Image 1: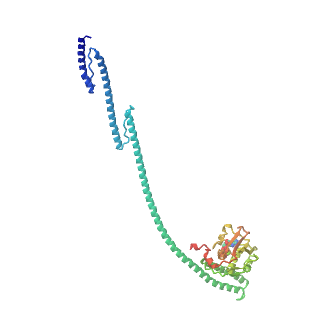
Image 2: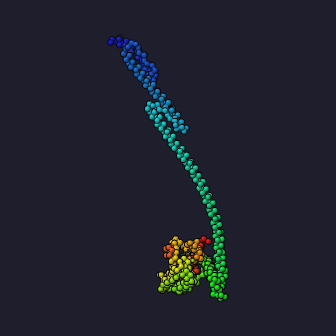
Image 3: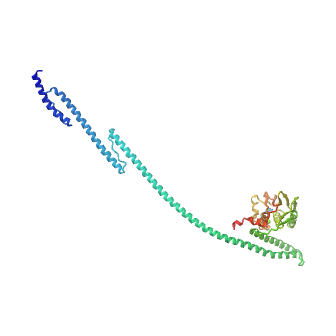
Length: 429
Ligand SMILES: Nc1ncnc2c1ncn2[C@@H]1O[C@H](COP(=O)(O)OP(=O)(O)OP(=O)(O)O)[C@@H](O)[C@H]1O
Ligand SMILES: [Mg+2]
């Protein structure tokens, strides 16, 4: 290229560059809105300018994409802030919408949604617990009330109990008075009855022995009936008197040395007449070496009489009754054995209770009030012994009433007697 041609080209290039530079300066300022104009006539700059324009297209597209993204981001952030505020006001159903693009904004939205849901659930849980707590408090209040009511009830019951106790105490005092009145009454009446009875019995005996004049056969048998019944009545009065003495603990015991063999034989003798009326044979059997006993003889005789009387009453005619006494270690054992109707096992303790009769319908006809065994039991216990019955409860096999008396006599029979509740009445007074 010649010098003038070079000068000419420099001129041309400078003109072209002066056209391009202002555009480049705009681009440097961030204004990519316009492309560089490309002259129709191609030269060395055309390629560069086309490349530059293509680059400008790319830059504009990039800027648009970035702007879009920034816009979407800020819209999303606004929505997220709105949603959080709604949730903060208590609406935990608030949700950030997902674009479905699965981008970082969706991930953020999902995270926020999950957090809101979790918080909502926790708040619900807290609410539920609060309700439960309130219910529990109500229940507690109710049970407090119930406890209060129960306390009041208890208080009332205690007051009522106190009143009832006072009434019972009063009744007890009245009963005690009545009971001692009853004992006194029984004592007096029995005494009052016994006195005329002995004169009745005395005169009957005189009549029977014909000391007041002769009597005929009919009169004699009538008088015998009267005599028997007077004796029955006398025994009954005696028994009632004994019961009241036993009950009040005022029974007198006068212990003396007694020969057992003689005592048994004498008693049997007094029973011979009653036994003979039924053709019953009374046997006595006295063991060897029985020591004398320090006892109230009359009372022990009364026991044997009661047992023998029963044996006669509940045995058939022409049967046998054995009265035995023998030494047995530290005791003397007495037995009254019969072959009568016997006593069922379940009644064997009961027969010793006052007024108890095994067959209340028929036994009364035998003449008796159900007192004999109760009295006998009291007397034996007072002497430090025991009394019981053995029987298979089968008719014909009979019963054996047994009692023991200690060889070494007990001291203070009366005092001992007062201490025992013979009839189980003392607790009921
Ligand atoms: N040997 C016996 N065999 C069968 N039953 C008997 C015998 N001894 C007593 N019992 C029964 O026991 C009851 C009570 O006897 P207990 O001697 O106490 O009274 P009682 O003989 O009926 O009347 P009381 O003796 O007062 O005259 C009798 O009524 C009778 O039912
Ligand atoms: Mg009897």
